Amino acid sequence: MQKIALIFLIVLTGFASNAQQESLFTQFMFNKLAINPAFAGNENAYCLTGIVREHWMGFPGAPKVQALSVNFPKMARDRVGLGFSISRNSIGVQQKLSIEGSYAYRIPFENGEFSMGISVSGRQYNTDFTDPSINMAHPYFQDAAISEGKYVKNIFNAGFGLYYNNDRFYIGAGLPRMLRASIDLGESPETSFEVRHLYVMTGFAFYINPKIMFMPQFLLKAAENSPVQMDFNLGWKFYDRYFAAVTVREGGSSYVLAESLDLIGGVQLSREFFMGLAYDITITPIREFESGSVELMLNYCFGRKDKGTYIVSPRFF
Image (tube, rainbow, N blue to C red; front, side, top):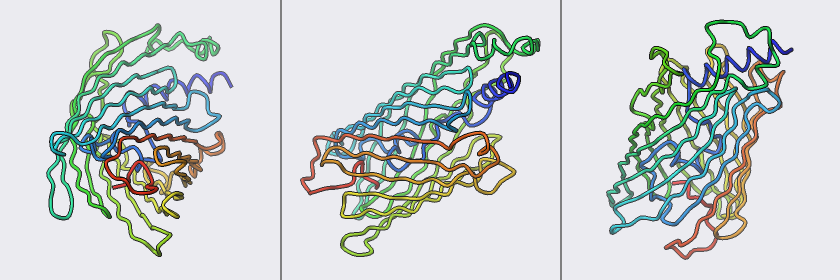
């Protein structure tokens, strides 16, 4: 069992260094700023969004993420948007602290608004091969190719995004990491880099009746040397206060068609405060070793320019 734990931790650390490195969020529709800087300013209010996610519960060393973002209202005659985010990710024996600032320039049209965004980010990778979860597996830990000790790596990057939306439709594309910054440990040759990720998202909404709105949404995630992953989301808003959705996540693996079935629920607790909860039911063979994934999202918006009644917040489009 100790040997299995060691192998899992090492594989996870390698996964973090060479495959999809961006955080995975089931409630992407509430956290677009994390993957597309062009969304900055789109809330038209001061909005704070916090997300806590535990992936593959019960699996040792499985990914965990805590993230906080701030989206500022439009400024400079509604042409400029600003955003800021900070997150902490852990996977295996590696932890990553990320800080990112976003700027968007918005161009109004008669039936919508188009924005272009850029972001600047910094990350600190901490890898600890002295972690007790590895030491307990000694003497299996004897491979000279595996690093020992603690390593810290600081890097910078930049991102770009496009976004168009109106009251009932949105489409956007984001490239959060445009540079292939080296994330190798210590003085080793440069073989590991931050992977470029492309996110393409779209969605629309229409009322089935005066009390129920139907909102299908789609997210495509593509990373270098990794399978394309797609989220097909069907959501409903009830009485402009409650939200329920189901997502089928496909791709992410070359061996299975669907990766998970995700359930999402949310409620507008007040005009300013919205809470969402997601539970991912794993469909792949790894389900035998874990208990699914859970994600809690809290959003607080204040200083809205509009004075309507309840509006599911943060806004979808």
